[in-house]
Length: 68
Image (cartoon, rainbow, N blue to C red; front, side, top):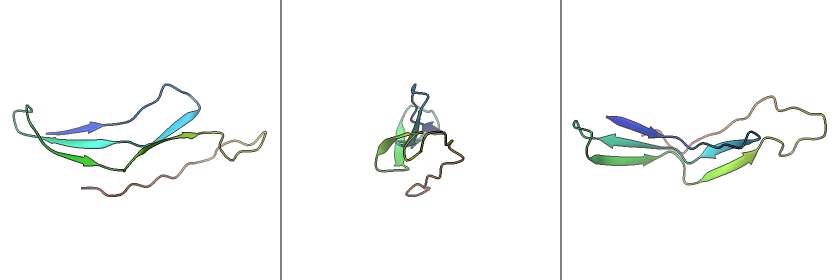
């Protein structure tokens, strides 16, 4: 089995960048065989960062270290 742990926030003006993991479980799903981290850290990115008054965010690009 594969279980994904995804970072989240309750803050509406923040985007979570990183902090996601994937766990590989055995067939009975009672033992973790491996943990894969997609990034080294988790960063809270304010949606308003670098934005001037009256401007809106059109997009956000994120990358990750690896896909195991």
